[in-house]
Length: 137
Image: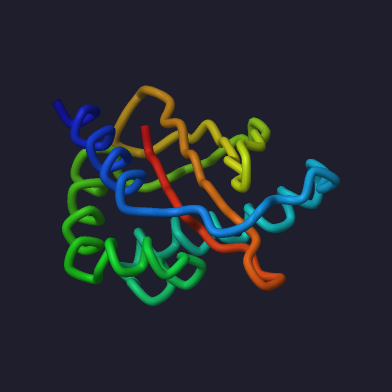
């Protein structure tokens, strides 16, 4: 039941977000990691500390408008209650899909024995990468 809740959350985030620019086809795996790892670090730290400003720092306007502070606090409590906090993660790679880049990690959380797939979708807008979608599956 809790897993399906996070799938619904992921679906809703997808539904209310939009991609705004093209990802460069020439960007390397190393470059993607150098952009994505600090973004995910901030998101995971924000979940741990209940810090909405840190959590939404890299979000695009649509995602920020959808994932308000109130929604974040609810998701934070749900995530903490169901899977806990991230203990470690392993970068798996990335996919380019039209304008967006989806980065994948396999993660271990402290309240579950199964692996959690973290997906972070980013687009480049005005020389800055922004998060357009985020999933914990």
